[in-house]
Length: 116
Image: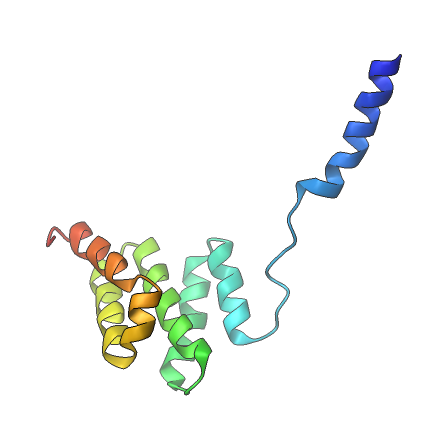
């Protein structure tokens, strides 16, 4: 009987710790695109990140969107275009390129294309 009580307590407490908090609570275009990326909805994420990047606003979200656009393109197998994005990031903001390990991702794109 004691075992059943412990098992019942464990089962009752599972839902409290099983699901991590959602990161998809934001309403900004960047947060929506990132949420799509996290949910593996890559076509939707690409549209969202591309719309932000095309504005070329001088905001932190622009470089992060460019980075995730490159990652999204890689997930879809578009390594040529992703490589171009990472090279563009280097040209626009070399410290960001280094900090976010874009060199590694550029190398992965080149390997996928048989160039590395």
